Structures are given as C-alpha cells and as structure tokens.
Length: 468
Image 1 (cartoon, rainbow, N blue to C red):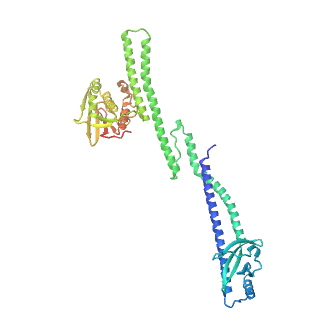
Image 2 (tube, rainbow, N blue to C red):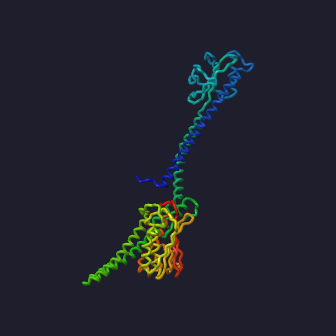
Image 3 (cartoon, one colour):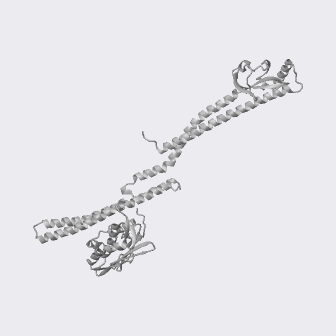
C-alpha cells in the first residue's frame, strides 16, 4: 500500500480535527439548548401550580365543590394558555379539568410517592407531545392534586430542526475543511516541492548549484539555508576527494612508470651483473618511494574514515625525541646538515599515541632537512609552559613564500614542485602532521620567510587530553 503524502495526511488531520470539533460543539449546543428549554418549561409549569395555589387560597374563594369548580373555570378562561389543567381532591375525584386536558393520557391514579417539588412527565395528549407537572397543594387545609401540562411540540420541532441543520452543516464543514486544508497545505508545501525539484537536479557535475532561499524567516528558509550549507560542504568534500584521487594517481603513476621502464630497458638485451644490479637498485628505490606514498595515503584515508587504531597512553616527549636522536642525525647528516636538540631537563608529558607522535617529529625534521641546502642547520626545541607542551622545528633553508604559506598543509601541495620529487616528497607529510596534531587536541602553525628558513610550532595540551 502506497503511503499517504504529507499533503494528504495534513488534509485528513485537519478535516478530522475540525469534524470532531464541530460534532462536539453541535452536541454540546443541542444538549444546552434542550436542557435550557426544558428548564424554562418546568419553571413555567411550577409557576402555574403556584398561581393556582394562590388563587385557591385567596380570601373570598368559594368553599363549596361546585362553586370552586366554577371559580376555576372563570379563572382559567381569562388566559387561553391555561387549557391543559386538572385538579383532583384526595380521593382522585376531579374538581376541575380543562376541555383540552386528556385524562386518559394523564392517568387517573395519584402519583405516589410524590416529591415535594412535584413530578414531571412527558406525555402525548390528543396526538401532541406535552410536558406535565403533577404537584400536591393544600387549600384551606385540604390536599389537592394539580396536573398542569404544557405543549412541547414546537420545542421538539425546533430541536429537531437544529439537529438536522447540524447533521447537514457538519459534513459540509468537514468537506469544506478538507478542500481548504488541501489548498492551504498545497500552498504551504509548494516551496518544499521546489526544493525537492532543485535537489533532484543537482548531480555530481552540478554540485555548485544552490537552492533558492525564500525570505520568509520560517522553517522553510532555515531548511533551504541548511541544505545549501550541506551542499557547500559536499561540494568541498567532493572537490577534495577528486583532487586527492587525481593527485594520488599522478604520484603513483610516476614511480610505477619508472619501475616498468627500468625493467624493460634492462631486459632488452643481455647485460652485465653490475648493470642488472644498478637496474634493480633503481627499481628498489622507486618501490620504497611508492611504498611510503601508499602508506601515507592509507594513513590519510583512515584519518578521513575516523579509523586509526590508536592506543592513547602517557608519553614523555623528551624521551621520545631522545630515542629518535640517531634517526634524526642520519636524516640531517645525509644532506650535509647539522642537528641541534634543545630539550628541557624535566620531562614533558602528554596523553597520546606514542608511534604517531614519533612520526610527527620525524615528518617535521625530515621536511625541514629536505628544503635546507648544505651547509645548514635543523633545530628541534621542546619546552612546556602554562599547561602546554611546545615543540618547535626550525631550519635555515629556502623558506616558503607568503602566497604558498597558507597552502602547505593541503594534500599533495608542494611549494617547490621542481625539487620535491628529487627530495623524495609527495606533499603529504604536513597534511599527516596536521592530522596527528589535531588528533591530539593540539595546534600547528608555520612561520616562514623566503631565503631565511621556516619555524614549525606545535602546541599540545599537557596532562589528560580528550582523544576522540
């Protein structure tokens, strides 16, 4: 079964709620109207009983049965509305009965037990519905039973007309509410349809397209703005992924081509053992370079996916740098550079992943050494102050231009593209370094000036760090 659309569901709910409201309102109005009219009639009947009692007890009223009957006939004749009345004595002998009063319908027996306020009954007299009050009164110390009736046919007709009118109005109101609700919901959801239509038209080749933002200040405007922000993030992520894929393909194509070319040249004709050895050494160098690039790509891919397999622990940065001393010396001396380590006397502890922090130190030192011509110097400084561990890697190299400086942390970016491949770099080192620092809740910055060297500063929180 196909689910209902939001427009249809809104219409159904609107019509249902309005229908319930109309039904409850009509029922309450009918009940109040019926109860009010009956109360009015009951009060009128009680008033007539009281009037008859006062008349019978008035001074000068005849005491004989016949004279009392004649007085009642004259009294009732003064008001034509008193044509439904009967008065009986304690033996149920009629003292007086109006011509229109139907004794058979009213009954001849006394109503026992009779409430002090009298008993009300709904009867039919001569084909007409009436409401009758039977009350006990005393006249000169003698008990009498008074029956007073009031025709309620017009009342019932009015109530019936109201009921039929309500039965007609309620479905018409529900239908009108459904039509109006559908029209309103259609207009209200029209911007949503436009948003959906525009969103459907956005493809991978049209990620720069944006939704129209209605200046309404309501939920639809916020939804459009939120979706546009999401599209902007998706466009940026897609562009970065596309660029990353293209750059990775380019970086991998070069060593693979060199390996293949070296192997093909070596196999074209028989060669000496030394020539084969040189070919294999070239293949090994490119394989190692390719392996390192693949490892860097896997690191960044895991970082993007949020899967790194780290095991945070308490790491002493002083001991870490000291353990890497020989490796750092090898990196620098192989390029004719000197290495200076400036470590504090006391340990500097941070919460983090030991291998990742070690890789951070090597990346920064190796990057400094690659772009520092001999003779030059690479200095690694470590200090702690105000709850922050600060590590600085400075060099006396070529530096970075002002226009390149904001871009050095981007993947595959090389400030000196002509020398980077010869130096063995692929432009991923600083990207990995920034990820490691941010993963530890820290911050990394670079200050550099052309021909005057660079200073890379890493700030890490000391003590407990929330690793997420």
